[in-house]
Length: 251
Image (cartoon, rainbow, N blue to C red; front, top):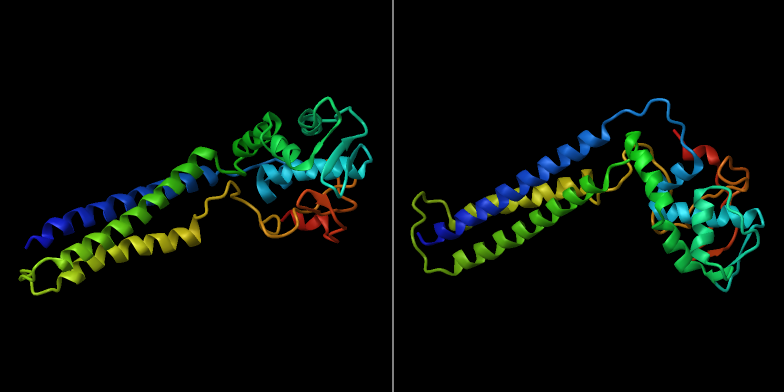
Protein backbone atom coordinates (compact mmCIF):
# COMPACT_ATOMS: atom_id res chain seq x y z
CA UNK A 1 0.00 0.00 0.00
CA UNK A 2 3.00 2.31 -0.15
CA UNK A 3 1.86 3.31 -3.64
CA UNK A 4 -0.98 5.26 -2.00
CA UNK A 5 1.60 7.69 -0.62
CA UNK A 6 2.59 8.38 -4.22
CA UNK A 7 -0.99 8.54 -5.48
CA UNK A 8 -1.99 11.33 -3.10
CA UNK A 9 0.55 13.91 -4.35
CA UNK A 10 -0.24 12.88 -7.93
CA UNK A 11 -3.92 13.67 -7.42
CA UNK A 12 -3.11 16.85 -5.51
CA UNK A 13 -0.81 18.16 -8.26
CA UNK A 14 -3.32 17.32 -10.98
CA UNK A 15 -6.30 18.80 -9.15
CA UNK A 16 -4.63 22.02 -8.05
CA UNK A 17 -3.01 22.75 -11.42
CA UNK A 18 -6.15 22.03 -13.44
CA UNK A 19 -8.27 24.14 -11.10
CA UNK A 20 -5.84 27.03 -11.41
CA UNK A 21 -5.91 26.77 -15.20
CA UNK A 22 -9.71 26.79 -15.29
CA UNK A 23 -9.90 29.83 -13.00
CA UNK A 24 -7.26 31.71 -15.02
CA UNK A 25 -9.10 30.95 -18.27
CA UNK A 26 -12.39 32.16 -16.80
CA UNK A 27 -10.80 35.40 -15.60
CA UNK A 28 -9.19 36.00 -19.01
CA UNK A 29 -12.51 35.33 -20.75
CA UNK A 30 -14.25 37.76 -18.39
CA UNK A 31 -11.74 40.47 -19.21
CA UNK A 32 -12.14 39.87 -22.94
CA UNK A 33 -15.93 39.71 -22.84
CA UNK A 34 -16.41 43.45 -22.44
CA UNK A 35 -18.14 44.93 -25.42
CA UNK A 36 -16.55 47.81 -27.28
CA UNK A 37 -19.10 50.35 -28.44
CA UNK A 38 -18.31 53.36 -30.58
CA UNK A 39 -14.64 52.49 -31.05
CA UNK A 40 -13.45 52.83 -34.63
CA UNK A 41 -10.16 51.07 -35.17
CA UNK A 42 -7.27 53.07 -36.54
CA UNK A 43 -4.85 51.35 -38.89
CA UNK A 44 -2.28 51.14 -36.10
CA UNK A 45 -4.81 49.44 -33.84
CA UNK A 46 -5.77 46.98 -36.58
CA UNK A 47 -2.08 46.24 -37.08
CA UNK A 48 -1.66 45.60 -33.36
CA UNK A 49 -4.60 43.20 -33.33
CA UNK A 50 -3.17 41.54 -36.42
CA UNK A 51 0.31 40.86 -35.14
CA UNK A 52 1.08 42.72 -31.95
CA UNK A 53 3.73 45.42 -31.42
CA UNK A 54 5.99 44.04 -34.15
CA UNK A 55 3.24 44.49 -36.75
CA UNK A 56 2.74 48.10 -35.64
CA UNK A 57 6.45 48.75 -36.13
CA UNK A 58 6.32 47.15 -39.58
CA UNK A 59 3.30 49.22 -40.54
CA UNK A 60 4.98 52.46 -39.50
CA UNK A 61 8.21 51.67 -41.32
CA UNK A 62 6.53 50.67 -44.57
CA UNK A 63 4.06 53.56 -44.43
CA UNK A 64 6.90 56.06 -44.08
CA UNK A 65 8.84 54.32 -46.83
CA UNK A 66 5.93 54.48 -49.28
CA UNK A 67 5.58 58.19 -48.57
CA UNK A 68 9.27 58.63 -49.45
CA UNK A 69 10.05 59.89 -45.96
CA UNK A 70 12.14 56.86 -45.08
CA UNK A 71 14.35 54.66 -47.22
CA UNK A 72 14.36 50.91 -46.52
CA UNK A 73 17.26 49.39 -48.42
CA UNK A 74 17.48 45.73 -49.45
CA UNK A 75 20.78 45.68 -47.58
CA UNK A 76 18.83 46.00 -44.32
CA UNK A 77 19.42 49.69 -43.58
CA UNK A 78 16.86 52.41 -42.83
CA UNK A 79 17.69 56.00 -43.81
CA UNK A 80 15.70 59.05 -42.75
CA UNK A 81 14.58 61.37 -45.54
CA UNK A 82 12.08 63.51 -43.62
CA UNK A 83 13.03 63.89 -39.92
CA UNK A 84 9.58 65.16 -38.92
CA UNK A 85 7.29 62.57 -37.43
CA UNK A 86 3.58 63.05 -38.07
CA UNK A 87 2.40 61.00 -35.10
CA UNK A 88 3.74 59.21 -32.03
CA UNK A 89 4.53 56.03 -33.95
CA UNK A 90 6.59 57.82 -36.57
CA UNK A 91 8.40 59.79 -33.90
CA UNK A 92 9.21 56.49 -32.18
CA UNK A 93 10.72 55.20 -35.43
CA UNK A 94 12.79 58.35 -35.90
CA UNK A 95 13.94 58.18 -32.29
CA UNK A 96 14.93 54.53 -32.73
CA UNK A 97 16.99 55.39 -35.82
CA UNK A 98 18.82 58.09 -33.89
CA UNK A 99 20.36 61.45 -34.76
CA UNK A 100 22.68 59.89 -37.34
CA UNK A 101 19.67 59.38 -39.60
CA UNK A 102 20.61 55.82 -40.51
CA UNK A 103 20.40 52.48 -38.72
CA UNK A 104 19.90 48.77 -39.29
CA UNK A 105 16.23 47.91 -39.74
CA UNK A 106 16.13 45.06 -37.21
CA UNK A 107 17.04 47.15 -34.13
CA UNK A 108 14.73 49.93 -35.31
CA UNK A 109 11.82 47.49 -35.50
CA UNK A 110 12.62 46.10 -32.06
CA UNK A 111 12.93 49.53 -30.45
CA UNK A 112 9.74 50.80 -32.07
CA UNK A 113 7.78 47.72 -30.95
CA UNK A 114 8.88 48.38 -27.36
CA UNK A 115 8.21 52.13 -27.47
CA UNK A 116 5.86 53.89 -25.08
CA UNK A 117 3.58 54.87 -27.96
CA UNK A 118 2.90 51.19 -28.69
CA UNK A 119 2.22 50.52 -25.00
CA UNK A 120 -0.28 53.38 -24.96
CA UNK A 121 -1.97 51.96 -28.05
CA UNK A 122 -2.22 48.57 -26.35
CA UNK A 123 -3.72 50.19 -23.25
CA UNK A 124 -6.38 51.86 -25.39
CA UNK A 125 -7.32 48.53 -26.94
CA UNK A 126 -7.52 46.90 -23.51
CA UNK A 127 -9.71 49.74 -22.23
CA UNK A 128 -11.97 49.32 -25.27
CA UNK A 129 -12.31 45.59 -24.58
CA UNK A 130 -10.54 44.62 -27.79
CA UNK A 131 -7.42 43.06 -26.26
CA UNK A 132 -6.46 41.04 -23.21
CA UNK A 133 -4.13 42.64 -20.64
CA UNK A 134 -0.64 41.25 -20.27
CA UNK A 135 -1.43 40.11 -16.73
CA UNK A 136 -4.26 37.83 -17.85
CA UNK A 137 -2.15 36.37 -20.63
CA UNK A 138 0.76 35.69 -18.28
CA UNK A 139 -1.51 34.08 -15.68
CA UNK A 140 -3.01 31.62 -18.15
CA UNK A 141 0.37 30.79 -19.67
CA UNK A 142 1.75 30.11 -16.19
CA UNK A 143 -1.22 27.89 -15.38
CA UNK A 144 -0.64 25.91 -18.57
CA UNK A 145 2.98 25.35 -17.62
CA UNK A 146 1.89 24.21 -14.17
CA UNK A 147 -0.48 21.62 -15.66
CA UNK A 148 2.32 20.39 -17.92
CA UNK A 149 4.57 19.97 -14.89
CA UNK A 150 1.78 18.18 -13.02
CA UNK A 151 1.30 15.73 -15.90
CA UNK A 152 5.01 14.94 -15.89
CA UNK A 153 4.96 14.52 -12.10
CA UNK A 154 2.00 12.12 -12.27
CA UNK A 155 3.82 10.04 -14.86
CA UNK A 156 6.98 9.88 -12.73
CA UNK A 157 5.03 8.95 -9.61
CA UNK A 158 3.14 6.26 -11.53
CA UNK A 159 6.38 4.70 -12.73
CA UNK A 160 7.76 4.79 -9.19
CA UNK A 161 4.62 3.14 -7.82
CA UNK A 162 4.76 0.38 -10.42
CA UNK A 163 8.39 -0.31 -9.50
CA UNK A 164 7.49 -0.88 -5.85
CA UNK A 165 7.05 -4.48 -4.66
CA UNK A 166 3.69 -5.80 -5.78
CA UNK A 167 0.97 -5.74 -3.18
CA UNK A 168 -2.82 -5.73 -2.99
CA UNK A 169 -4.47 -2.51 -4.11
CA UNK A 170 -7.26 -2.97 -1.60
CA UNK A 171 -10.11 -2.54 -4.09
CA UNK A 172 -8.94 -4.98 -6.72
CA UNK A 173 -8.29 -2.12 -9.17
CA UNK A 174 -4.80 -2.19 -10.71
CA UNK A 175 -2.41 0.44 -9.41
CA UNK A 176 -1.85 1.81 -12.91
CA UNK A 177 -5.53 2.69 -13.22
CA UNK A 178 -5.41 4.91 -10.13
CA UNK A 179 -2.56 6.91 -11.66
CA UNK A 180 -4.17 6.92 -15.10
CA UNK A 181 -7.06 9.02 -13.82
CA UNK A 182 -5.02 12.11 -12.81
CA UNK A 183 -2.89 11.69 -15.92
CA UNK A 184 -5.99 11.73 -18.13
CA UNK A 185 -7.26 14.78 -16.23
CA UNK A 186 -4.09 16.80 -16.82
CA UNK A 187 -3.74 15.77 -20.46
CA UNK A 188 -7.39 16.59 -21.13
CA UNK A 189 -6.96 20.05 -19.63
CA UNK A 190 -3.89 20.65 -21.76
CA UNK A 191 -5.74 19.54 -24.89
CA UNK A 192 -8.65 21.86 -24.17
CA UNK A 193 -6.31 24.71 -23.29
CA UNK A 194 -4.42 24.28 -26.53
CA UNK A 195 -7.65 24.62 -28.49
CA UNK A 196 -9.29 27.33 -26.45
CA UNK A 197 -6.72 29.52 -24.72
CA UNK A 198 -3.17 28.45 -25.61
CA UNK A 199 -1.10 30.10 -26.81
CA UNK A 200 -2.77 33.04 -25.13
CA UNK A 201 -3.05 36.02 -27.45
CA UNK A 202 -3.87 39.64 -26.68
CA UNK A 203 -6.54 39.61 -29.40
CA UNK A 204 -10.04 38.75 -28.26
CA UNK A 205 -12.15 39.97 -31.18
CA UNK A 206 -11.82 39.70 -34.93
CA UNK A 207 -9.51 37.68 -37.08
CA UNK A 208 -6.61 39.70 -38.39
CA UNK A 209 -3.43 38.85 -40.23
CA UNK A 210 -2.03 35.66 -41.64
CA UNK A 211 0.11 34.29 -38.83
CA UNK A 212 3.76 34.39 -37.94
CA UNK A 213 5.00 32.60 -41.01
CA UNK A 214 3.49 34.95 -43.55
CA UNK A 215 4.86 38.29 -44.77
CA UNK A 216 4.25 40.80 -42.04
CA UNK A 217 1.10 42.18 -43.46
CA UNK A 218 -0.56 44.87 -45.35
CA UNK A 219 0.47 48.46 -44.97
CA UNK A 220 -0.86 51.79 -46.06
CA UNK A 221 0.25 53.87 -48.96
CA UNK A 222 -1.60 56.77 -47.35
CA UNK A 223 -0.16 56.53 -43.84
CA UNK A 224 -2.38 55.65 -40.92
CA UNK A 225 -5.59 57.07 -42.37
CA UNK A 226 -6.37 54.66 -45.18
CA UNK A 227 -5.10 51.90 -47.40
CA UNK A 228 -4.91 52.22 -51.13
CA UNK A 229 -1.76 50.20 -51.78
CA UNK A 230 0.00 47.49 -49.86
CA UNK A 231 3.52 46.27 -49.37
CA UNK A 232 5.16 43.33 -47.69
CA UNK A 233 8.09 43.36 -45.34
CA UNK A 234 9.99 40.12 -45.05
CA UNK A 235 12.98 39.97 -42.73
CA UNK A 236 13.09 43.74 -42.56
CA UNK A 237 13.14 44.29 -46.33
CA UNK A 238 10.31 45.51 -48.53
CA UNK A 239 9.94 42.93 -51.26
CA UNK A 240 6.76 43.39 -53.27
CA UNK A 241 3.07 44.19 -53.26
CA UNK A 242 0.93 41.75 -51.32
CA UNK A 243 -2.22 42.33 -53.35
CA UNK A 244 -4.43 42.21 -50.25
CA UNK A 245 -7.58 44.20 -49.75
CA UNK A 246 -8.00 46.52 -46.80
CA UNK A 247 -11.57 45.47 -46.28
CA UNK A 248 -10.40 42.10 -45.03
CA UNK A 249 -8.94 43.79 -41.97
CA UNK A 250 -12.38 44.31 -40.43
CA UNK A 251 -15.52 42.25 -39.85
